[in-house]
Image 1: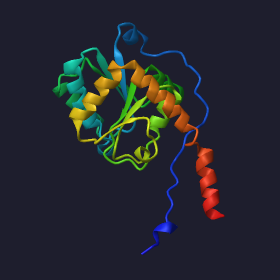
Image 2: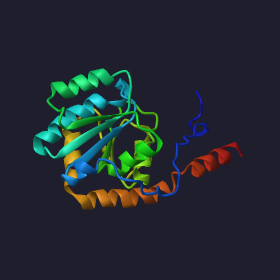
Image 3: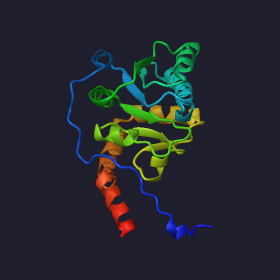
Length: 205
């Protein structure tokens, strides 16, 4: 019975500055003309990595030059490795382990696209972090960040057909990726931790 005007959402934020360019990674793949699609996060049922792998199969059927990188660790790691093998994707999916700090940031910069296919995600900082490094994202409609980030593509986590279509379209059209990053970075200016802190202060006052 709490009045609706007593409930306010304060979304998470990110750092406002543009990230520095780091020494490149996956250079050999890039020099071969491969496109890199990155998943970064825990490998658990909540994160929808199994849907990501099913979408990868559909993408590779159309464009075998795409390589998928899974960065992270979790209780579903063995299951996902077996799923990749079972779908015949071993040559197209790289398991990078849990990447943090500079290693994670280098992977963001190497990727052409980041996908966050979460089944359930209270917020989800990954697409904001990716934008700081100049990389666009596809995110699930079921993630909290989908409420505030408009310059991304959004898909239901279970719709692997549409997820694959969005991945292919984004990789095929560099102008689309550039526009998503340019407009997304502008939006980041209003999604900083300082902005979140100011909103909390205003609520208390």
